Length: 164
Image (tube, rainbow, N blue to C red; front, side):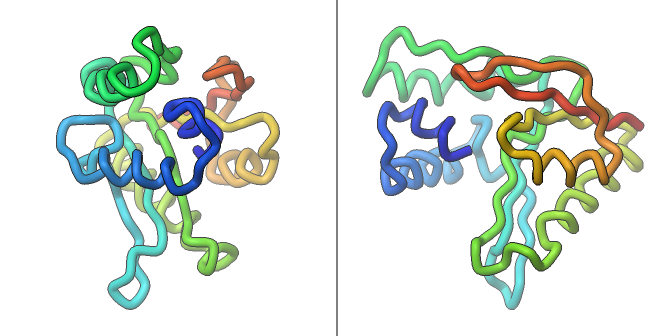
């Protein structure tokens, strides 16, 4: 999500990107809110987070993010819609670098798939950067299927879904 956050904030600054996401994660009723996050912990420390929300609510959840960006950087900023009604959308998944390679991201994804696909009978979708074949391999291994491609903030992304 690093490149996307940089587009949102208008500069490639890890510190400002983290501050931007921390601001919205702490707030309610936006696409990055803690209300839409599932986390994995090791010894009571959060080591992975997955952000997921109902695609039908994207515009409502995105509005405060857009208002923030437009007021501070670009009043005409209007990113494409990366999701839509009919799917719960995995907006982002991150694993602490010190914990990568331990299967924590896979376990978190498997938990979310069990909860939303198998228990709630929902479709889950996500976009994967075509320049990230490792992530795509993981999603395909978990039985996601390609349903097309989308451009998002100038990047070509593959749209994957898994259905109940």
